[in-house]
Length: 360
Image (cartoon, rainbow, N blue to C red; front, side, top):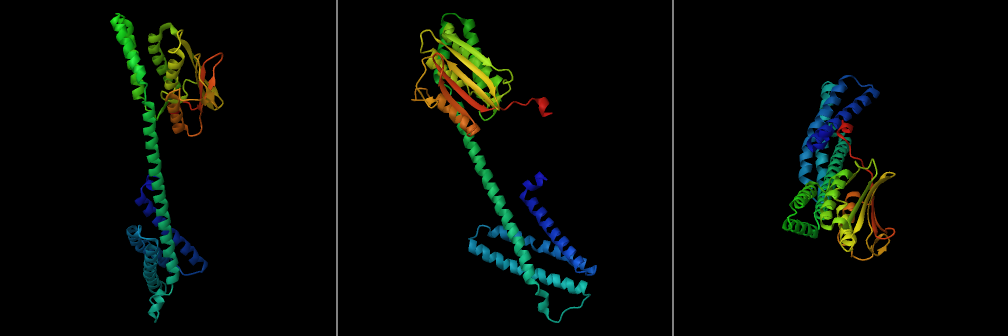
């Protein structure tokens, strides 16, 4: 049935046939009330069949005049409807006199079109239904096109935001690998290249439109932080606090990445003794709470947002991605960490990844 209603041509034939079948049933029930003879059933069937036939050309005529001006369209519909109604009435009365009255024809030939007003309203109703359904279909089609265009725009925006990888990260990593090679730390350099390769593969092959399990995001975060740890050594301390049961929660791919980059830049690289980055995930009712905290110098905050643009594009991109994916059902808030530093909190709806077993 879904396939039938998705095909507008099949939809027309189905509704067209059901409409005239309904007309025949109503006329038949009316004939029972009037206690007419059985022969009248033949007239009713022929009426519906002729009506079914002569309204088919109306469809193709209306398709040709669909884009005409309203007044011209309305005038043409009334004219064509009157003509078709007169033809249908004449055929009905001919059948009535020949079949029901057994050839007892009237003397006045105008009696063959005496019921034209009734037929006119029937044909006008058919025309009204046709234009109403066609207008509704056109409106739905335009809505679908609009939604598709909006989704494509969101997809392009998300991809642009997601692929804005920090060029400084790549530069610093390659520079660190080069340094390791020069001092003959080939094993460490090899591990760093492998981790960089895995991280880039993850970042490039994960579609930003599709959400991924949190455990995959944590995997990517660990790869990134392990690369950075080679650069900062003991100056970088990492803490993960992932509440059991949140591993299968769906999150936007690389949503933590810009937040960790900011923490590295402002809380670790800027301090002689380095710093600590803590990544937390936990459930809160029907929501998932993610947090990236550091013990750096922090920044000025007003109403949960940075007071200035010194946080870079990371937070802006993250907020825009969340808005595109969750509309208004999310929150991104900055707070002061204790005793010092900055915390970035993200709240999104808790959606759990379904396993193959659950699908089955």
